[in-house]
Length: 260
Length: 339
Image 1 (cartoon, rainbow over the protein chains, first blue to last red):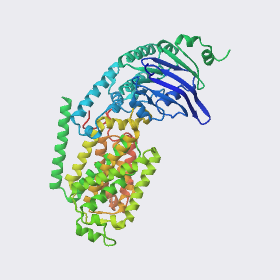
Image 2 (image 1 turned 60 degrees about the vertical axis):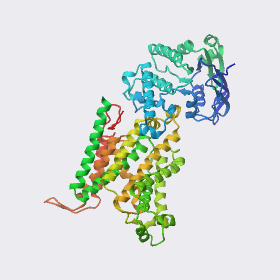
Image 3 (image 1 turned 180 degrees about the vertical axis):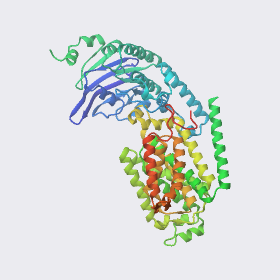
Image 4 (image 1 turned 90 degrees about the vertical axis):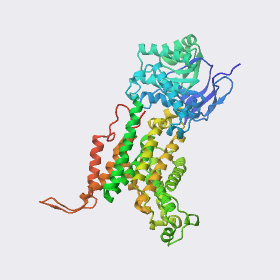
């Protein structure tokens, strides 16, 4: 039996006296879309930050298995190493390279896979030029995928909000991830954009053979695309299951609406 | 097609530079040639500092220190053996350097490499700091170098400085190195490593999440900047013929910073133009220091007046053009070799 792609075991994250995440355990299988929901301040983004190495967890472990055979312990690794293993993310409060162009943003996502050393890039040795050309084509392809090919030379910060979100996803895709973590991809989008986003997530999942872990507040997004949902409240896992189970779960309803 | 045009423009600029230098050497007086030399050196300095501060976003103020290392390396390595004996009369020079007399090119390369090595050694602990903390740490480091050079009598001849360094630097050297620097940094910034530097500047958290090893890239950028600072320091030694530790005070760093800010952080073309304007401007404004006769009033010469005027020009320039002299065309860096 293949090991799951991501296995989070008894994760604890304390900031001083605040317990942002207490004894969280979850499992994501290859090819799944898994949702993580919970009221504001429940600790969802903290879990993403721990998985991607921004924080070092107080206790617990995270195991990542890109191909079902080898297993990597992610706890204690730096964010760039985790990205190299194939875990990439987007940010809740968009973090693009604002002063750079749209194309450059995506192109930078490729950098971690560049094999040439810095001197061959300066001397523009043939093997680097070939590599760069391939990466530019890949970046352009990704831009076309998200429909931003016409704005490739615009400054990233000049894009409208929804496009910036999509650009972040394209930049993450450029790193060739196996597991993609999306932190509120539909935040601030109107219903039309949200519909497009759902289609888009499905499309990239199939095309790039991804496994997706996402945080989202838009219930229609979560309920429609997730195969499995984890619900977090005050750092504690209160429910897990498929969308229909979650909708019927009393604890979840309580957490969201309060006790009547 | 466009690629080809750019190559033509590049070659044209190169040819014009060579022609200009040739004509300048032929027809201008030594003083003007010296200003041209200084401009070339400041182009290198400005670009190397812009790589660190403007492109990678590390606020470093250690440039004078790295220049000092380069200048002393070139000074000690190129100085004739007899000259060394004359210089080191207080204490003889350390034996392993007493009998070396290198050519200018290997000495310049050594200056760059030693400076870069030092940059890596200093950078490894210091580049973990950010913003003002980094500025203070690097500033302190530059001062340490100066103090060390003042006290290592048998290596640097201490406060007496070095005199009689061969005047190898001419316009071909200073502008040759400047062109190499322009080429190196333009091509560096065009490739993925340069783009990664920009990413580090823009957002460190996002850059790390995209798999960019912050530490490695910061140290790399810092080392390249230090390399060119060291080479420029070496050129300076070859131009002046005399160096002493007090030349490499903080004010020197600020002169370069002025060029970088005026040219625009992160901009190659702007830095080149600013370097030339600032260097030439400092010289042409010299008349302000002398006494002036305006016919109805006689103004007594006030030494330092040109610095006041220059500062005013700078303030006006920064207010009117906060992003540097050259405004960036639609989301792009101005570099004459661009992708």
